[in-house]
Image 1 (cartoon, helix red, strand yellow):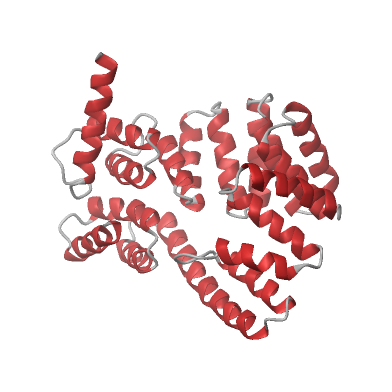
Image 2 (tube, helix red, strand yellow; image 1 turned 90 degrees about the vertical axis):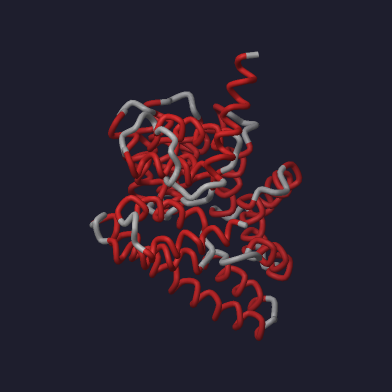
Length: 331
């Protein structure tokens, strides 16, 4: 009974915080922390980000807030911001194998392969029975062209967890890279059938179809994956190539133009993120970054940066305006 009451209290607290402007509530830091944990456990990534970011902005070392913020970022698809949070978590607890793996995973997803390989090796040493550090170190080595080392890692992971979907997908990507296209396609079609909502499996299948000389079959997969607001530039590039190779020249050129525009925006975001990471007190750059993220409808990333601004410039009308714009996006 007490457990149910506690859960009900946490759920009510999450709703209370979500209904109010970030940070501007008379709740204690521990109450906000617990509400952020509840939101994360419920899979509400944006709620968790907003609440936990307010805690971290006030006390960066509060309990496990950095680790939880990293997890919230991953849940929201924010791989680059996740990196800093997992680094802070590891600094506080260097033996945390889960934080080491998730840091390596974040670096892999951000295409920082040399750093990812090193951290994933450390994660494997901390948790040798977990196949995932081996899988992602193998995939990282594959991106770096270290095929023999990649094969060794992935095969070791397969021997540990032959039925694990992520391990099977890594083996299929190894097959794709080494030209065993029929085997890769067979495994990926099986994985897509078992987990049709998994974007990575569908992406790998589309890439395999491209490598097999069947771009027209890859086009509809890439079109679905790149639909919605602000798709990643890499997806737009793959779609443009599939269209061009399948003979749809006009559509391919149009998507290629979109790819160039998205690439430029992503580079601007990365530049501003690097600027505020190097100089956290540069509020003008942070304001520009939040405005760009709001314009791009990247709600989760904007929430993280806005939480810092609300602490740095609590009475600034520009921050209040950005808060209102972000609230409108969330409705």
